[in-house]
Image (cartoon, rainbow over all chains, first blue to last red; front, side, top):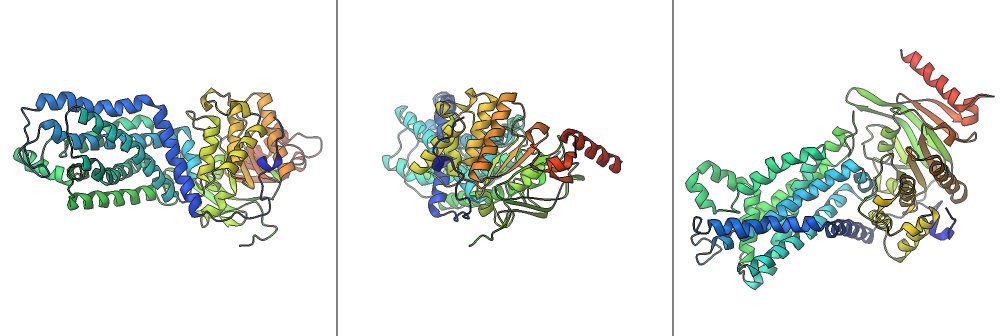
Length: 292
Length: 250
């Protein structure tokens, strides 16, 4: 091991206290966390492919198969009858975000198991900022997947008004935050990576199927009033409707309010959960669950 | 705010910590002076990692206080953690990123980027002898090389206090010696304060200040030479101390 230029290696500032973290520092921290997440995503090509294949299987096979059986009448935001694949496209786009949110959660659990979570949590920036940066990173990755899917759907004949692609962007961003925040809370509760399979059974599938992603709520109500109420209480339903209306140039205020509210609630819970003094991390004895 | 002279790099004052009913640390107090190498000697399960987790705020400090250059870790975590570089016992590098990318990520977590940061990272990789592996994935490195990357990473943000928790465990003798020498150079030449947790006696020299942690308590402190006594080895002294402590507990 050599002795290079002292100025580059010196711990430095040996006697000077550190200056407080400025706005630029917060920005660099955020950019660094997003950069790492994007880098990992780009390196995991199979993750991108599987994120695309999943909704495309629904679109190409399921929707085609059920086109005749599940015709959709004229309901807002549509002003004509639409084909079933047109109806399910917004729900499938949000499904990508749901899986991505849970994937981010999975990567938090993985980071905790391999120890790299410690590096994140010993950063001098506040925990809420670190978690917020993680959320933005997850949203950035999910948007790339959503728009790639919408491009393929367009080629498949699912035509959305051109302005809708732009108008839906804020809806996808807010929805990404909501699903990412739910994922953060889940990651704080899941102790081991092996337990994560249960997240599929108890979170992803119920959220997706008990929503308006695959069938309009009036049809659900025809079948079961109780299931209709469950769907109505499911924030994923409102995320789908928020995105669906936005894609057709309309704003759905109730859905927007529910998605924003759910985001705030779950983000607050995540900040508490990751607080060493108050949350699950504190009770459990640290980010790796080291407590015997 | 002016920092008072004479404030130690690390001040652990009356720290206790329990996991449920099991007491992992019991009223632990010691200091690491500025620019000094201090060894925390204890067997596995003594509470070293718990102590490190409290100092780094991975656990909340509910009893006692931890101060880094006078900044309380619980009350002013940003100021305290900014002064701190840590090498954890378990490996914490991102295996899928390159060596340089790991350091860039760490720099960003401390609000550092740009040309100055890049120069610093290049310099640190030269310091640990890994400049030629800078663009290799961490997963391709040996255990000793990965440890050196972790030391370089811990120095990226120019901390004044470095904590190393069993940093040489699992390494071959040559790698162990290289890492100990590197850290001692940093203390001697750069004025870094170091808390070196270990259970390996030959990593401690006669003049090092040593705190012996056993069953969650500091049972002895002093220079290694003082603890060992005339003609005895540190290992023999340590064994006598811990056996006596176990006898008293029984």
